[in-house]
Image: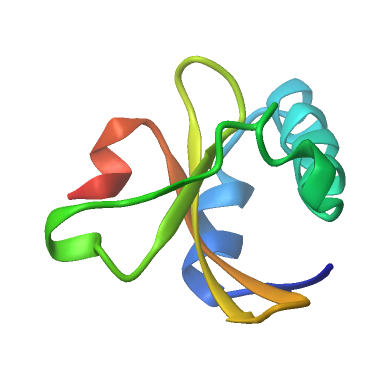
Length: 85
């Protein structure tokens, strides 16, 4: 899967410490293969974010994304559960 990084995601990502950045990179690489989506807990969001999806980096952090097409996703935001607000 092709990944696009939106400016908000890039700005939020830059604020994390290097060890967490490495974990984020690993999860994004796993996300590229649809077979890993269950492991990453990919799910559709509800409420005002109902047109977006999310997957877990770890127990605390999530990545919010949107499918641009069947083979392309745009990473929109990263953070703890406050990223859903």
